[in-house]
Image (tube, rainbow, N blue to C red; front, side, top):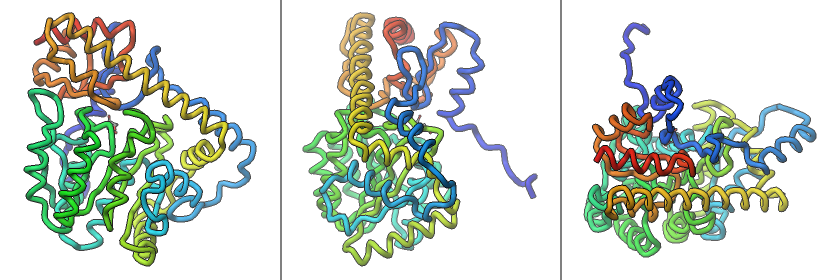
Length: 393
Ligand code: LMR
């Protein structure tokens, strides 16, 4: 049986980490996988998370199962963080999942369970795992234009034009903030236009929100999600706690589903729990418990928000430094967009050959589509990177 399996290509993002580790050059720079790193290149445990972990160690007296959809206090804390009061809470069901990827997977399977035959629309480009999971599940997909390769900004006219082909009950996946891989995001007016168009189409928005707090701040980053939640009868959300709580390996994420009314929400809630049971039974609890403690304890929350804000503004500063460095090295404003982009990533608009040269000649690792992780920059390497990029143009 197993001899029928075919060798699969390695995941393009995760493969980079393996190549990077094997590189013996001490000047090497990792701008690959989306993991936050401080100026020393270390991914720290956030202070509030560490403090919560200590409290938990002292107070937790059982490791027995939680409930199938996870802990209700986690659902509530995350719902409030993401949705605020934008929607009647009785219409919201929630389910903890292993990471944001687990949430995305369960949202796709929820769509399958409805047997609506919906096409799932993805931005071009999007996080590579979106189309990969959809292909694995055998679901219908389509793409909508999103990114202008020439300006490295959102091509909004093209986006609206291609969303014109969305059919009733189709699902349109939108990045809540900090678009991955481009770093180019919708402004508030554009969110309103997209909302009106999708309402007119009777489509269902699916928001993937994995970087809340990394772009313009916790509240501003949820603008689009809250706007849509306030307008649509139905909507799905996949959220990740990996990045904004820095708990990557704990695998902590959540599905939020908005149904037409409270009765429908109860049925959706049952379906989400059912999917957990079929896929992995109970969701991981440790990360979810830490997140709940951080969000509900005023002192821990204050400290977490401060640390997250420092991470965010530090990345903005690095964006500005790289944009300035590239302006100096190229004598042009070609890379000015880096300072305008938001989140952990920017797509630089380099060719694959240029990306390979940066890896081979300068030990600078970025994803093949020229996506860089801004958190891989620091004061000591930013000018070296600017020089290297200019040298391969
Ligand atoms: C990324 O895009 O680099 C992150 O979301 C990590 C991953 O799993 O791909």
